[in-house]
Length: 70
Image: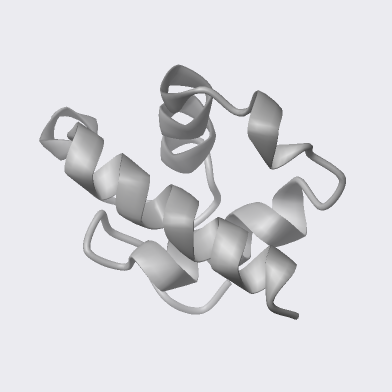
């Protein structure tokens, strides 16, 4: 991945999650799972303590939209 990912990059983070977890049932993904997956992504370089529910929901929504609207 060329770009460093941050919490502000919800769409790019969602795309990285799709690549890393292509077969995940999104209905089974918890906020805690999503948080752990994001901070473990290659290229993710933001402060894990900056995460909040609003940011995680934005990432989750971008993931859903990309998966179900493709």
